[in-house]
Amino acid sequence: MITESDCCGNGCTNCILDTKPLQEEDDNRPNALSIYRKYNIVKILDLKPNITKYTFQLTENCDNLSLRIPPGHHIMMRSTELLIRPYSPFSVTTADFEFEILVNDCPNGEMTKYIKGLNLGDSVEFRGPVGKYQHKVNRNVVIFTHGVAIASVFRIVTSILENQEDDSRIYFNACFQDLEHILFRNEIHSWNQFWNFDGLIYLSKGGQDFKDKLKYKEAVLNRRLLEEDIERTILKVKAIGDFEVVLSGSKGFENFIVNSIGNSVDKDQINVL
Image 1 (cartoon, rainbow, N blue to C red):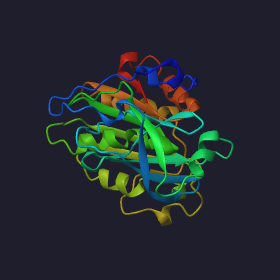
Image 2 (cartoon, one colour; image 1 turned 60 degrees about the vertical axis):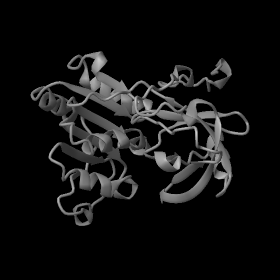
Image 3 (cartoon, one colour; image 1 turned 180 degrees about the horizontal axis):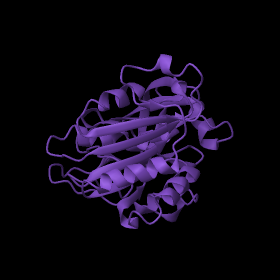
């Protein structure tokens, strides 16, 4: 049972207290994440400056359990000091009870200190999933994401592109500092080969020799995302049918997007991850 003590108290958009059991017709086994369980660190990989990828796997017997983390949902990591923080798995392998998360190195962060002190084979407690997002098939999606928060939207994109019954169009806008800091750069480049994916990367500090380092037909702009870019995207998607907006980033980034959208989109169409 989830209690008030499970809440980190940081006013998260998606709180552990909002966790609800998932019902799936094809799997009646309890979700392994329904209570705090220990997951071993099986891989650690430094991806970018200050960003590390961790792969976790359930340690206990899994015969009567399943692993279900819907796209756009989070899971809560709990440290030995009972610190709690949400993370968004960008990859989930249900058969192996594995998932991968990105950890941003915040020098003064207590959870960062905890994670950085862990090694391969160490175990960490997780619980969840947490979130309210649910994509409707054939409903177009406008995504705005910033930095490491791309992990929250990664599986939303892949779940749509991999579903042959879903004709949703995706308008994807990702913001990073420069080429060196782009996460999932190869994946975004490959997504742009799909008929229903229209993706752009915006760089706030692209550099002088920017174009010489781009891949073939790579959609990267050497400037920040502007209010007029947001307005233009919303007008484009409005013209083709029903849609939703998905935001994933810092509070400042979220406020910028919401203020730029203004009253042109109903509040119930905006999903903040």
